[in-house]
Amino acid sequence: MNILGYLQQVGKALMVPIAVLPAGGLMLGLGYAIDPSGWGANSPLATILVFGGKGIMDNQAWLFAAGVAYGLAKDNNGAAALSGLLGLLIVEMIVGNINVISQITGVPVADMSKAQVIASGAAVSAFTGILMGIVAAVLYNRFHNIQLPTALGFFGGRRFVPIVTSFSAIGISILMVYVWPTVYGALVNFGVAISDMGAVGAGVYGFFNRLLIPVGLHHALNQVFIFDLVGISDISKFWSGTGELGVTGMYQAGFFPVMGYGLPAACLAMYHCAKPENKAKVGGILGAAAVTAIITGVTEPIEFAFMFVAPVLYVIHALLTGLSLFIAASMQWFAGFTFSGGLIDFVLSFNLPLAIKPYMLIVQGLCFAAIYYAVFRFAIVKFDLKTPGRESVEAKQQFLPVDDRAEAYVNALGGRSNLVSIDACITRLRLTLKDVSRIDEETLTELGAMGVVKLGDKNLQVIVGTEAELIAQAMAAGHQSAATAS
Image 1 (cartoon, rainbow, N blue to C red):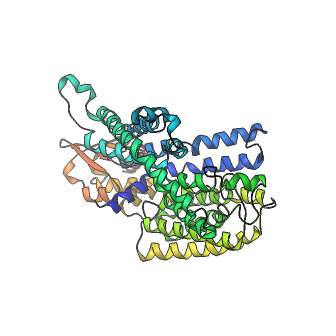
Image 2 (image 1 turned 45 degrees about the horizontal axis):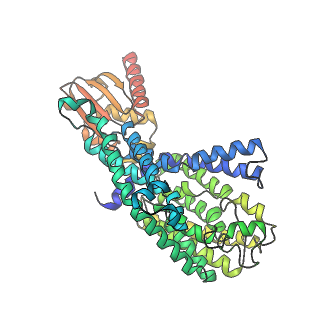
Image 3 (image 1 turned 90 degrees about the vertical axis):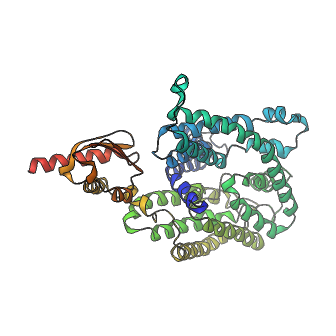
């Protein structure tokens, strides 16, 4: 399989954890809206919402490690998800601990640069979660049925996967200890170099801020421009009113037209381009993601939905983000955010001393919504990009109603007259047939079956994923109805 095809599989595997993220974003947004000054400290309800949301948003790496490993594993087995989490925990304990890095490299913590210290804290991100999810899935698919010598037999099969994943995670961690801070430091230096370029620098920052999200290195530039690594502190100075009018806020304002307008319009384009039979399913996911982006500015559920399945769209998104920051900075249309560029922060910052014509960001946002919609819809249709809802084989298995899917499986298994017993485990249909040779394996694959296991002349297992029990129940119900009618 080519790289693009595998990235599309990664993108599909991400859809389950992505569906969780809007809940976290909405919790955070509502919590900050209730208590914008104390960020939860002044209200028990805000505290619950803020920390509940952080429980989701701050642990995206865990969600992605488990979700990607589970989604890419041949039979969607929980051992793969467990292995992904285990690998991430090892990376977190090694690369995310500055004292461990000091001991490995021999460089005292006191002698490390500020960028190196921050790089350690940013090492565990969505990127490392996805990376370990992929590693765990690859190892699961390779070793899940391995046979060890009798003395070690207990550790064979699926039990071997967490073990080999652990050692792989150690190797990846050692590599990251040396590579991650170097790359991170280089990006910090790049950020410093463009920090005096005014509106152009803001545009360049916006472009790379989005472009680097898939690998988790956007934090390096954030430390330069919106935090305090080199003294710019765009966020804190904007909200405290201690910055410079017409300058402070230039690294924030341009995100509002993208997060609150452009990306939701991209969701609409992806929905309109989805296959008719898939629109109900993807409409729920994309709709929730769009509402979350508009209200809170949390855009990860949208961006991760297409960054791997359609990388060209993601590069376009990064370019448009850079353009938006450049325009807002050039025109001096300024608003700021404490959390992200959504409606809540926009309203809260509207009358701050350093806000300049923030209402013009609404006009810019409407223009960007039209641009995003037109560009995304054109590119998706023109290049047949496999954005959510445009999948081929997997779409049938993922989006057809259970009853319809069950009937289709019955027909592919040789009809009801060929079914003796119907059962299921977590991911498999366990069947007894009169004649296994009557099954249509090609049709089973088209319906989304990930594997067919023949056990003699009469027993068959069909790997269909986590809805196996629902499908089996629907098949059995139809089987019983047919028997009663006859």
